[in-house]
Length: 150
Image 1 (cartoon, rainbow, N blue to C red):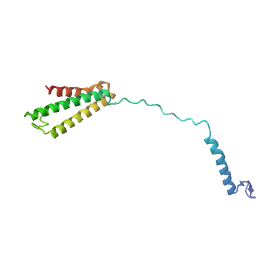
Image 2: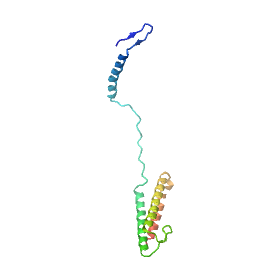
Image 3: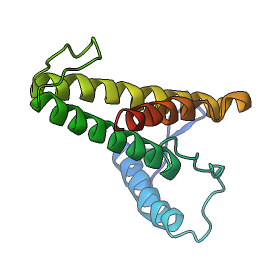
Image 4: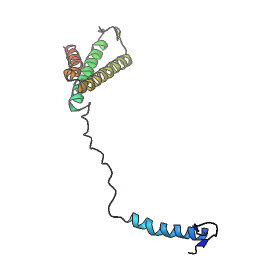
């Protein structure tokens, strides 16, 4: 490397070509050494988060299965009575509902019951006093559907 000194300045200047070569040499020499370092820098480790208990657990699906089965049995029994000349007492369905109307209203009603139970169970996770509140509707409705089968 050749340093050039000017008479009116006390600083040394390096020609541009040599400066580029110097930067390239430093880059080629330092980067592999940094990359090959055995120790990695310490960084904060994320704290392990415990998985939250599922809202829709086995108990929930069991209760909804019992509710769905009892509702299906009720609708089948109602259809059999309607086919023999009986009539429906529930004003939502009408006195002589078609199969499509019975399925649509019954399915919407069941979906609403499942959604209500899910939201109540989710609410009960945050409030101890409401932990088993979600079971009231499925148990009561299952009992009501079973009662109509007699």
